[in-house]
Amino acid sequence: MTELVPAVRAPAALAGLTPEAAELLAAAQAERDDTFTDEAADLISRGLADNTTAAYRRIARDYQKWCESTGRTALPASEATLANYVAHLAATPTAKGQPRAPGSIDQAIACILAMHDHARAPKPGTKAARLALRAYRKQHTAAGHRKKKAPPITLPILRQMIAALPADTPIGVRDRALLVLAFALMGRRSELAALDISDIVFTDDGLEVYIAMSKTDQDAAGETIPIPYGSHRETCPVRTVRAWLDLLAEHGVTTGALLRPIDKNSRIGGAVYPDGGRAARGTGQRMTPHGINYRVKLAAVAAELPNASAYSAHGLRAGGATSAAKSGAPMSAITAHGRWVDGSPVVAGYIRQVDRWSENPMRGVGL
Image (cartoon, rainbow, N blue to C red; front, side, top):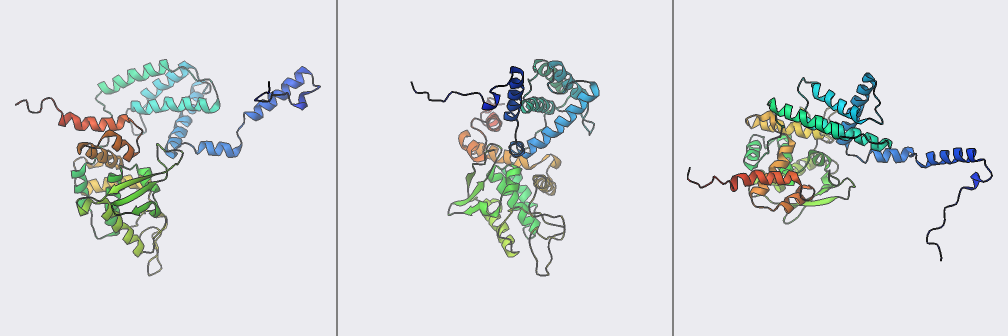
C-alpha cells in the first residue's frame, strides 16, 4: 500500500553517533525547532491589539517585581503564588489611592496565564485565585463601590453637545463631525483615530465608512459600514463629515488622516497656510484615541451636562447602540453595524436597558 505520508527518518547526522551524543544532538535540534525567529516574534507580539499589549506589559512587569520581592517563582507559578498575588492586589490601592477594581484583578489573572502560554510553561491552577477574587468583589461591593460605566450619549444628549460647539471654527467643525460620526458609526475611539480620508465614500444614500481593522477583526479583513443621511442638519453624519472634509480641502488636505489635531491658533495638523506656516510643532497629523476621548469630555463640559467628567468616547458608541435599540433595530443589526461579536452580552445589556422601561411590568398598573 502506497504511503500517503512519507516515513520520518532520523537525520543523517545522527548516524554512527553514540546514544549519548545522538541524544544531545537531537535536543539541540528540538530547541532550534522550538525557537521563534526575531521576525516571527515581532509579528506575534504585534498580533495583539496595542492597548492589550500595553496593559499586559505593565501587569507582567508589576507581577515579576512582586515575585522578586517575595522570593516566589514567577514562571511557572504555583496555584498559591497566583492566589497570593490576587490577595496582594486586593490589599494594595491604586496609584491614585483608590481600592483596586475587581475587573483589573481579573485582567491581571488573564495576563499571568497568557505569560505562561507565551513561555510554554505549565499554567497554575486558578481555583484559589478565583475564590479570592470572588471574596474581594463582595467586599468591594459591600464598601459601596460600583462598577464605573460611562453614561451613554443618547440622541438628546448628543444634540446638546453639538449645540454647544461653534459651527464656524476649525475645532468646532471637526468636533461636530467627530461626535456625530462616532455616534452613527457606533465607533470605538481606536477605529475613529485610524480613519483616513480615503476611508470615507459618499453615496446617494449617505456615506460608507471603511474600517480597516477593529477589536473583533484582528486579522484586518476590513469592513464597510453604511451610514444614512440624518433627519436634522446639525446631527446628520453625512453633512457634518462633508463640512469637515471641505474645510480640510480648503487647506490643501485631501489625503491622510481624517481626524486631525488643531493647535491653539486654529491651525490643522498637516495643513499648510498662505503664510507658509503650519500647526505648532508636536501637533501631529492624526488625533490619538486619548485625544478623541478628551474632546468628547470637553464637549460634555461645554454643554453643561450634569456630571460632565463622566462622559467619554465610549458613551457615543453605547449611545448609538442604545438609541438604535430604542428605535426598534434588532440585536443582529446592532451587533453587525457596531462590529460586536454575534450575540454580544454588551449589546444585550443595552437592549435590556431599553426593555426594562418599555416593557416595565409597573407601566400602566394605575399607580
